[in-house]
Image (cartoon, rainbow, N blue to C red; front, side, top):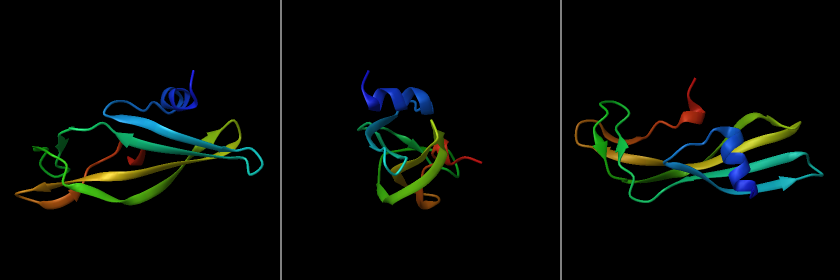
Length: 99
């Protein structure tokens, strides 16, 4: 099993999301995980849930996740944005950033 597959299962990453890269720093006891999405996904507007195509991506953000085997774990992603005719350009919601 590849490290990207392993972390997809460990983190519960589901479609349309996928783990594209994992960097392990044993000395620094840190794991960095990059999450991307599949092409052609239609995204719901976070305000009205209208299904919309990709407008662009926000700058890469980093979230601190629960430790992986006592290693500091960080998720990296460029969040898709949609252009809703009613609400304008907004970032879509991502499951790992929900309260």
